[in-house]
Length: 117
Image (cartoon, rainbow, N blue to C red; front, side, top):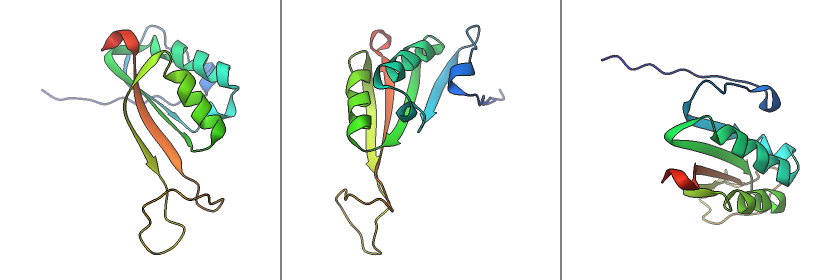
């Protein structure tokens, strides 16, 4: 059988596909622009559009506000996997996260609604 993939791109506040369900919904650097509690409300709203065993994928720069948002998300969702990524500010391999405005670190995490596991 032929499998297909459909991608939908939308402004965060305008997305309204309540009659559709998705395997994964990606929030790429968008939750950071919201107030912390609003970011969590939006994530919950979108989680209602997930298929069973679906994922919410979140990426944000790694800083205090993002860490607070991630802690709030973990109150309602289970983190399945996460990674911290940073392009090395130098040309040598670096194995620690460094504060660098030129090359910030990013946290990328996949979540599932707590009752979906």
